[in-house]
Image 1: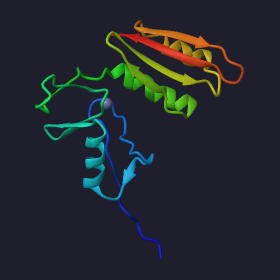
Image 2: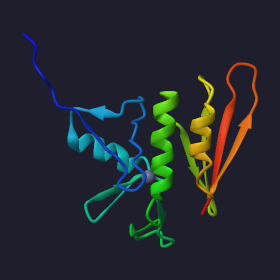
Image 3: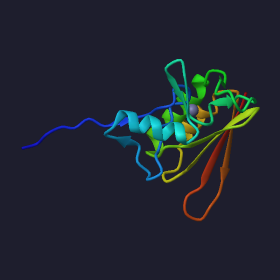
Image 4: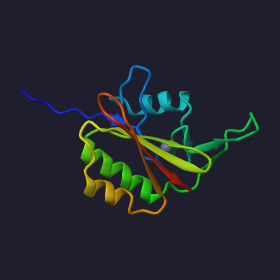
Length: 144
Ligand SMILES: [Zn+2]
């Protein structure tokens, strides 16, 4: 007999990244446990929403657990991440700095000209390819 089971994951309300527990699992059977685990690992909860460590600024007052959520995650970044996932079948790595975002991925299949043209059709995007013996690394720099 096949039975279905429900698992819970915790997704950042701002950037969409998933919490991964110390054993490397993204989903757990216990809803409360995944939240507890995330909060112990620098995730934060505010007004019923959840934020990964990259998406908020902790309070300078150590006694307070008030946080400041960073400005809305740009639609362009989400769009590019989705596009890269589609063409490479790999989740790109996004790093957010004070003045820019960097999205990097490996070209397991070379990015075609049409795809590259679409990526660079956005003025904010700078396309960099770092040649390597096996698969080139591509870094997209998007100024804020
Ligand atoms: Zn986040």
